[in-house]
Image (tube, helix red, strand yellow):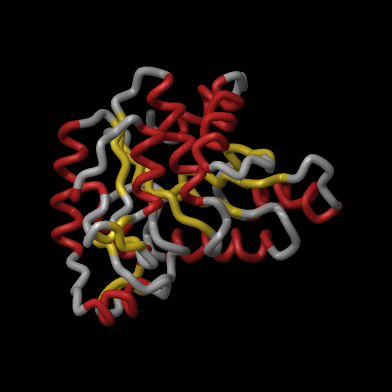
Length: 240
């Protein structure tokens, strides 16, 4: 079986740091000579600038990967900061999976590896009863699940991995993002429990950093990862 030339990044919830993880991986791959593309298929809550809707998430991903943002990298940009299905309805837009798939295949044909960031978690509705999980399946990509370290994360992460597996999705691994410098008991225990219960490996426990600027945070995390001996193993697990 041919290793997939990409990964679909999802989260256990909104606000767990999917975009930072996706951008950091894009920067790390670029630092290691991999031709990498990024994709944010659907962004709700976009801002308007000079008459165009701007996806800040897609812009950060492109900046991290050293890329110029194209429509293929951010096909659907929606105004309202609500679930994409609702944002699309408000904007009078129908989210078409075939259009996203065509854009993805163009990126895949032009780059060695494609990092796709989903919207929220797997059960977020996108269009006509179709979920983020359905989009990951349409793109035929394994998942990288981003989880937070605090109380409740074991339940959220196990549920996410279980749902993915029930829907026929491969979970390549879990990244626990934002571990504090002095973790509490729940945070200390979460990585082991998640690794034991999820049926997928914990591929990293990333530290919480105080930087306010997102690109500075991406630079710091990617440099930190590049110095870790186990990073080569993690990249291999992601099919790089």
